[in-house]
Image (tube, rainbow, N blue to C red; front, side, top):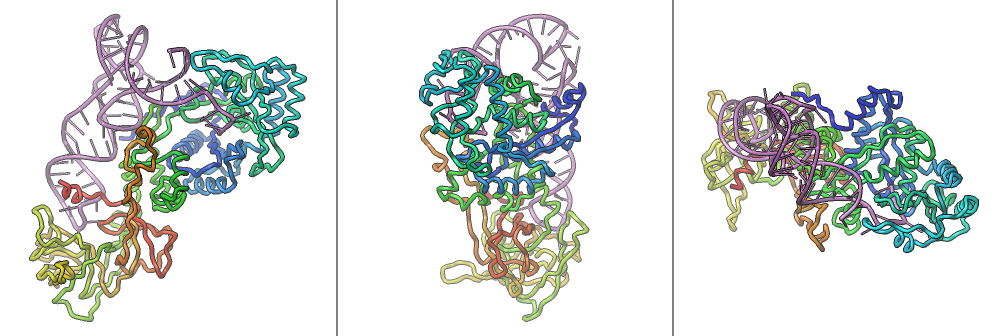
Length: 556
RNA sequence: UGGGAUGUCGUCUAAUGGUAGGACAGCAGACUCUGGAUCUGUAUGUGGGGGUUCGACUCCUCCCAUCCCAACCA
């Protein structure tokens, strides 16, 4: 059943539309700071804002909140643009930068000073900190709090001109040093930083703080609903205060709970640590849930969208089960990924009653979920590869794949029966001798007899080699937000998160695939061609396995 | 401890005074040329105590737990 229930944000917006607030207009934005790359947690915020704009015939902006030149770079701006575009959110021509509003923000600050609502404080950082008080004790006023408007104006101008060193002065709002809300105790608006900005160069040496800047950015762009995460709840009174004092367009800030995923890191700081320490191969490592990592892994943007839909939206702290992401990926790929044959851990099979040197063409269905995907040809011959796992000499009762004396089907090809097991001197199985039933060609059962298993295979002479990279979870603990005391994320790295398989055998139809090509290897999972791949050395990433009830049984 | 928030199946999320529902995960079964997909069935939940009411996840009250705020970060 489709549910008509809406999340609390959509309820608020619908009420605003109904009552004509903002002339029933809806305008959202996503405001990343370009100091890292986007991950699946950001995808929730991006898609929330974008989808809401779509649903209510509104507008969506992409705006870089680039107010801290010490941490930000153009490199991240470009990466973020690329990732959000890939995700599917479309800001059309509305790509904005907070740094483009610096002049306007400066004017607003002057306005606040003139109104006696802001002052230049010449205490140093330690003094400001000491005078802020604690959560249970009020702060004390700065000795500079009563400076005249003229002096404040003069000092602020000179701050801009570069007459002072970093940290010598700050501009603060004059609110209430005794407020129970720490953020209202004369919050800082500007600091002096003689640092080159990636967009404004050396034009500015004063930079605005988040609380001062963010509401202005929203206001300037005419944002109606400014959606942000829960930790900004206590900032809302300040967001409102600035806009009220200035008397300018006043968006509504609404906070929601950010998404956490178990067994993963979704913190820019921790991801950066993994990248810098070389635990992963870069921001796009397929084990990372960055958007570039996900993309390289083969996760389609549509699967991320449907995952985000399923996760929902509320205000309670949450840790989503990774299995829900996997489900969303399989759900999408099952419908759209073409099926291919590939053997990751090859075991040679000789069909002893099949003529040597002969090859025939077998027809295979490209996608049983999509008739229009058509069929393709697979060469079949006397020597084949099957998956080593698909044979057991002494099989338990529930194992119904190939075993001595048993008949199984080779997908789309023949019923075969295993007659002989060939081993080397160490006892390792090197080869299986089987016979096939010519009447079962195409994998059919002319007399209606059943086989329990159908195996994937490739013709040995026609197979192409490839490297296949298998991934497992990178992190070994569920909740990476609450690490045990004195431990770092580095203490919880899964040493087996990457397994590289060489000399995998692929069906010949895969010969010319290009990076990002995605398909299902039958019975194994969904795989995607890695950017490291080239025609001489194909490289595939496993996006996700198929659901595997046998693996589950085997564990018992 | 001052202020701000949040507690519903294992997990995520609905129900705004009227049968606590859905999804994932789990379990059982059917079907199957992927042990896939699909289909069917099934167990498990309102943080706690009082109160209001014919009736409370919902309203009142007290308590408990958890998260956020004392960066010249966002």
